[in-house]
Structures are given as C-alpha cells and as structure tokens.
Image (cartoon, rainbow, N blue to C red; front, side):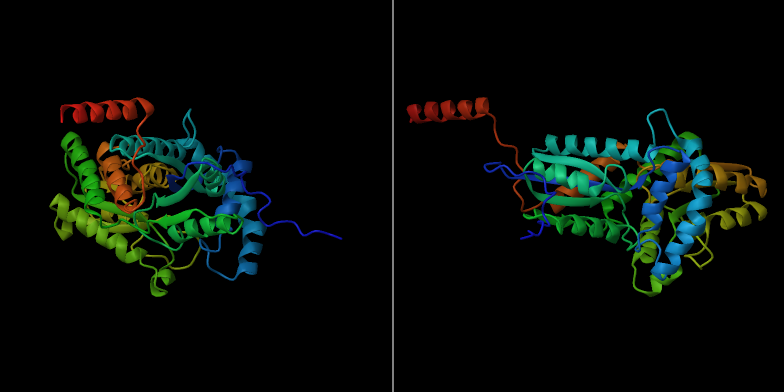
Length: 368
C-alpha cells in the first residue's frame, strides 16, 4: 500500500513546551545576490514572473519573459546594479537589515519582547525561510510589516500571497496580522519632512521639489488599486508639512516597464521639460521607497540627473531615502507598536528581578 506524503512534511520541527512568542517580520521587495548576470537573471525571473507584478495573459507573458527579456535584460540590469553596489552588498539589503535591527532595539527599549526579522519578497532571505525561523523559535503571533508606505497589489498584496503560500504548507499556523499601508501616517510624513528640511538646511532650497513615486500601469487605477490616490495623498501631506505651494512641487512616477500606459506624469520626461523651460534647480525625493536602492540611486541620482542637466538644468539634488534616519525608525516603531496592540509583548522579568520583587513584597508585608 502506498502512503500519501503529508503536505506538512517540510514544516520546521515542533517542540512541545515552547513558550509562545510574538514576532515582527519586516518585508521589502528584494535584490539580486550580486550584480552578476546569472544572479540578476534569477532575481528577475522570480520578480517579473509574479502575476501580481505583470498582469497580462500568463502564457503570453511567460513566453515574452523567458524568450526575450531574460535573455537581454540581466546583463543590462547587472551593469546598473554594479554602479550602486557596495563592499557590503546591495544597498536595499543593507538598509532593510539595519532597519529591522533598529526596530528590534526601539521596541525592546519600550519593553516589548518581540523578535524582529527582515525578509525579501523576491530573492534571498525569503519570506518563507524567515517565517520558518520565527515559527521554529516559538512565535505564535506574527505581524507582517511592509517597507511600502503606499498599498499596491503589485507590492503589498504580493507579500500577502507569499505569506499565504507559506501558511498553506504549515500544520499549525501562527496568528497573523498585516499592515496594509501607512501612506498618511503623521509620523511617517513628519519623518519625510524632517529628511527634506535637514537637506535644505545644509544645501539650500530648490526651484521645484519633485516627488517621484514608483510607477504602475494606469489600468490598475481603474481596476481599483488605491496606489495612485495614496501617492498623491502622501505628496499633499508632505507639501503641507514643508509649507510648499502647488507651484513649488510636482508628483511624478518612475520605472516604467513595457509599452503600456503607466501612471503619469513620468519622472524623466518631466525633468527634461523642466530643464528645457528654464528651471535651474530641482531636488528629487522618493517617498515610496524607505530604503535607497537601484530605482533611487541609479535611475534617479544617475539617469534622471543626467537627463535634467543635459536638458539645460543647472543643479540637480537627490535627497536620500529615510534609510536609518532616527525619526523614521521611531515612526516605524510607533506604527508597529500600534498594530501589536492586544498581543502580549511585555518582556518577562528575569530570575533576579523576580527574586527582588519577592523580597520587596516580603519586606512590605513585614512592615505591615
């Protein structure tokens, strides 16, 4: 007789008697392991193969992806990655890992005994591997925190897909919570404003501040994706915090892929038009990115810079992402703490503290 294999065969080993714990999984998009063509190809195959990212008929897209794109794009993208790569590796991974460690420290200072790990939706340090590790460590409650302030099906919903896929292979699923967005959270907006104001204090102010968000196909807006509206709300709140008039800032969208119409106006053509029309200085900030990455360091600070200056602009300033800014980590800790409400997270007192408490109680009883 043939026995059917268990769908939970690969689940991490469980040990009875483990104390239940609360955990936080901080998730970003991902990055290749290196700028090499093979690593970039593997990353792009997973990223662009996600039906949440490219919503065209599946078979047709897979033929295009594997027959054309993955034969040409890895070398070109690898060359771009090489221009931003550091001795420690990918900037996106460096900043995401640092943010997770700082978040753990911030929460611990507030008395929360929670384990914080980071994961990437695509590539190494996968969501499944980190959920496995958290579950093996006894986590029975897990909060999923996206590094994306604005909700989009192409990013945020894809995180949930990965979590649900993992849960489908697990016998005992931890309690799960998800943060969908924090695009209009006052603490996030204040951190962004502080970043911009700090830069202006050191370098002066521009003629125009360009707020460049990652683009998505325009059809997603008409299908009900809130990303477009959330980007514009973030921009409006940031402009209000900075005291900018409508003429002093512009909202644009970058990183267009393919020939379909994406959210407009597009970042680079807008910058070219500004340079040609006599705008002397622009500053660019990317509020949708909480960590600097290829899209900010190469696409904006290199390609967009060159386009603006070549079009006649005189000064181009890129304002770095929030990265490890203390105001941002504080905001992230506040947002996380808010969504942990109702779950037991207080650190258990150690043996010495318990003994001190017992002796204090005995002493108090003796006085009475």
